[in-house]
Length: 228
Image (cartoon, rainbow, N blue to C red):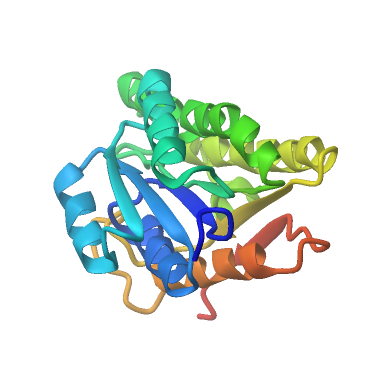
């Protein structure tokens, strides 16, 4: 496959869970991937699994604008361009609610769940425009429903709203934008396993559906919840 033909996808929060599952699904479908996360050892292990000719590991804190900028520039330099970006990095809170919540933890949450998504979008859009590309982001069922005092939920309401607005912006030049809104997924996000709930692979397949839909079809949101 020539440089001009291959598709390149950048994924934040790629070291585990939905991000890692999406990287695997993307590589299976012929897409090359740039993997961004703070845990370099985990990224290196994933690259070894996927193949260094298909995957690139870039240690990066998604909440840091300069680190993301450097990682995105490295991606474009390595692969020759960028077709798809997936702003997937995010976090939850150890102490829920407003009255009992931890303001320091809120700040970190906003930095990664809100600003991190904005940084990714801001930095990749010029590259996606060149290839009439696709931007995806991970929201949550918590961004579509009300939960008592949930600061996490409020951050995902932002992602939901931003996704709708960004889709309108990208449509002006033919780009596509998809917001993934999963219910409970069995990942390390939770302290205890959730074996009856969604798997990361379920969300990865939803992402692939949006990505591989014909260019004429912009799948703007995918809302996936457990069957039971």
